[in-house]
Amino acid sequence: MGNRRLKLYLHLVWGTWDGNPWIIPRIERSVYRCIVNQIKQLGCEVIAINGIADHIHLVVRLKSTVSVALLVKKTKGVSARFINQFLDLEEHCIIRSMSSTKSGACRPLNPKQIVH
Image 1 (cartoon, rainbow, N blue to C red):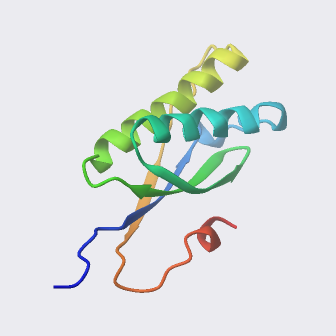
Image 2 (cartoon, helix red, strand yellow):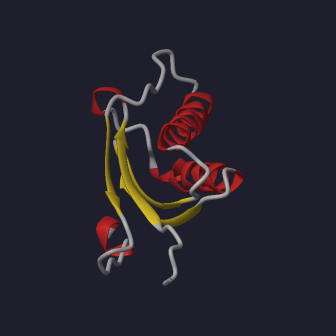
């Protein structure tokens, strides 16, 4: 039998409430760092992360024992909490929308090209 190792990549995109430009340049790297640390704590691997003032793109190699729901919950939560605390927002930076695409290892993929 061949190698049956699972490689599951997720491309996640989420935005700020009403498209507010809360991911300002002075906190952008710190927000990304929080997200990367959370992904590592789950045992997954960040392939690429990028975004602009109102949304974030993230490509992750998912560990087979981590559910998509848990990864999304933890990742969105840590980024929203960081932005709320840093900007001391009265209206909370609730993550409004989320979309994802999945890619298995059955076709060649360069996940970094997705977010750049």
